[in-house]
Image 1 (tube, helix red, strand yellow):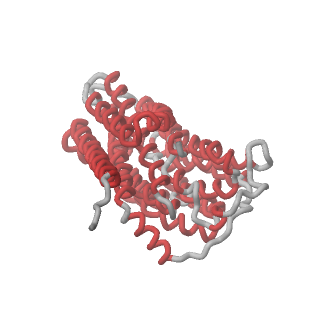
Image 2 (spheres, rainbow, N blue to C red):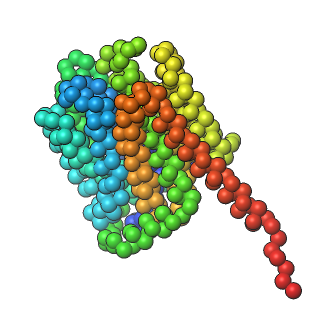
Length: 435
């Protein structure tokens, strides 16, 4: 299966086939390959970039209860420190992917990390919740340039046979950054407060950005393309007019709505009675992400056995079961529910995102960027709506929101199954005979 089966972020899929002329040329003999010069440097560089990107993007998620207490804010208000970052990333990933076609992948990643890291060092000093949200939005917009460029860089610089392994290392950086950033922030906040926790994440990102800048090899196969807004609009319009792609975008957004809602609010629930867990332990809950890495890796085998829609039905069932199980007031049941939610989400995301690159026959980078936009808009909406639902109805309110999103995925998948069945019957029926 395509790289999404490793638990990749969605840009991994489309950008692996970039739209620049370099992508269409035959593999050059001097492209990077395992064991060859520059490959290890490139791998470490992009691994570091992945850690920095996702540690920064979700840096406040494990700290929301502490942020709420510091500013006297509700869960819904504090959740904007996450939603603003993911929403800005969603809005900027498509234009930044277009800019990388003109100015270069390496240059775009370097500039994006620089702006995000500098902003990350300012975030701990935000004097108010409004300033914190604004800085987080700038950070998310800047970070959009990393996933928008990394996969195109790999496709252009790495030999095709080594591409999956190279992508896997970048994805591993994504996963480890997202998980370790939350855990590190949680324990640092328990010991020294949430501002020091965000500063710690900022310093981690500085180290990763320096490693990236020092180790990333220069691009040797990038060919600048002219910026053609009309061509971009035509390509995007073509993707949005495709019914299957629209369904896949909606599925990604709805799955991420569930995931964003659950992991934005879970810290509040576990910090309250009957659990009363300390901040560091709450942050460690994100170790459950490792389950997602395993389930996304298994998605390819699942699709081979059940088909794409069968895998989606199983992902929907698993996510729904986890949501309902998490309603219990026993910690073991809540943790088991989180395991099921995480496994179902990552499997569903892997299936939907990999289907995007298989469905789009042209403009795959733009098709994947659109999925990325839908995915992070779902994250932004889920974080905010999940917090609002929690404020209105407690954890049960958040679960209701999640169940509604899962039912949306189920409805879309059922519709797709029916449409595919109708198309097969139409294709199998004999053509009418005209006398």
